[in-house]
Amino acid sequence: MEWEQTLQKADEILETNDKNKGKGWWGSLEKRKFERRMGKLLSIPCLSVAMLGVVPVWLYDRKLPFVTLDRHHPDGSVLPIIKIRTMCEGAHLLEQDLCQGGTLMNVKNGNDPRLTPIGRVLSRISVNELPQAVNVALGQMALVGPRPWSDVECENVIKPNIDSDPYKTLWGYYSEGLKWGWVGLASVLARNEESMARRWELELLYAERASKTGDFRIVKNMATNGVLWQGK
Image 1 (tube, helix red, strand yellow):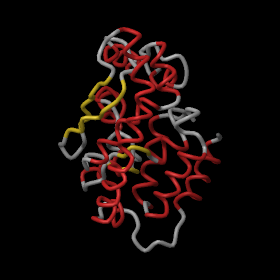
Image 2 (cartoon, helix red, strand yellow):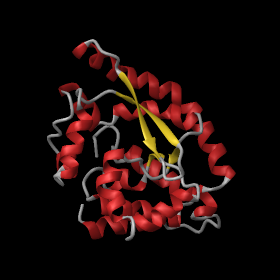
Image 3 (cartoon, one colour):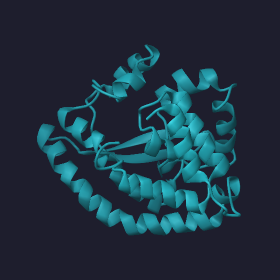
């Protein structure tokens, strides 16, 4: 999708007459309560589907199929993201090398050397992300919100550019209580297809124009356009 078309689609998703927008929505008790209820409702079916990925991961190398990855939020909190393990041992070292070489986003779009053969399939259809329904149910994560990044991406891409937008403004919103989400505008419209700056531009659009209607549209796009099942 061309970038202009991506921005146009983002505008269509976020356009709404809702009175509660932006921080007024993502910082509201209504959103938090609703999403925790949804997380609890989705946890069992999502974990049930996730088991289809757990079995082949365990059979591949007979190692623990789940992994918890700590993500450090700008507000100082630590989010333990639950995932099905898709990467090989030493993946964090490979990520460091790829990020410093400026090729991390390129390999995410194609032949990522960090992925195991089973992990490549699970990652493409996002089954490895399903256990994060538990994070939503526990209130650690929003159902809809900007996606988290790794420490390596933060140190090598985000912090060196933190004094310029979209990084500067969005970082400020995180400091004001914006939570990471299970699914976000960038993951729907530009899932690993754009540069970090462009993904942050989409996340910033969400932070500034978020609404209940927009959240429903993002979830709808995730389901109907095959973000999970087709890896789009």
